[in-house]
Length: 384
Image 1 (tube, rainbow, N blue to C red):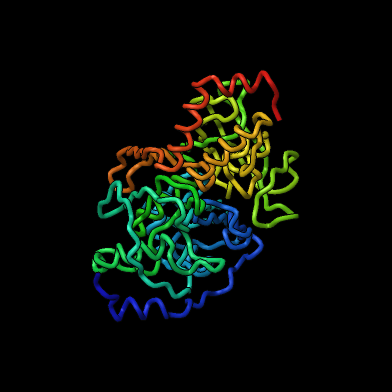
Image 2 (image 1 turned 90 degrees about the vertical axis):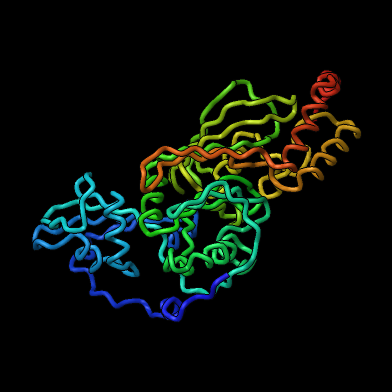
């Protein structure tokens, strides 16, 4: 792996650029700020909206935004505009567009560089696809995506620093910002896409923000469903009793909108394999939503799924469940499908990954047990 150049090392140490105070601070509205809202988003991007004052003089769009958005370079703004992530009055505009009074400007940007010291680490990555613009991987369970909360080593970001180190001359600043624009929980496995250039990061962030991509998860959950498919709607925010988990606020008076669509894939009497499609991207969304409707993810300790939730009172059944827990010692959730538009070619690309061995083993055990008829017999004799 090649070393960082002196210029790249200096860039990491460079202090933030000074910016003039916005002329009309009351018109600047920051939305989906990942820092301000306690990182309750799974997508690592920020959304800004600015409504120009009536006295606004004509000015280039990139210069206007540069003067008003802290910690954002003019190059990032220009790349975002070229990726159609900057819209004026609902329409994409080029960096040279002349801002006028009353213009309603919205912009989606990938998270900026964080001023932390991170070291490249040779952590194996399962690469599904890679070109000069994007990297698509199958993340293994147990790998933390983004450093923080005591996890400053052994993360996906550390692995990406090492992986991109061999392409330092191509990707430029990528060592400082290795392209992560969405994430999966530590113990969730599956497909992730990484942007390798400013343009790719901006384009992908725009897709995640406007939900033009397609993400589908497979989850093994407790209980059976009366229907074949359904939708869960309920605002999500951190629980006031336990800040490490998310709670559903159905009245919508707290938290952020969250929508999960689900359909049954296979039934195992006391457990069900479901496919979940996200309409929003909140932290722990599937896990919190499934607990809310009484279908906790199998072996999910944070959301009460690591116990016998459904089934009989018999000792043999309880032992069967414990054996299944040992086969899949994590919450049974896998990001199976990711469909995106390529940032440069515009081609629709679909990536699929099979269920990993641990989760597959637990599903296989449930499948075999359900097919034997033992579970049906237990259901007739008595349930918990």
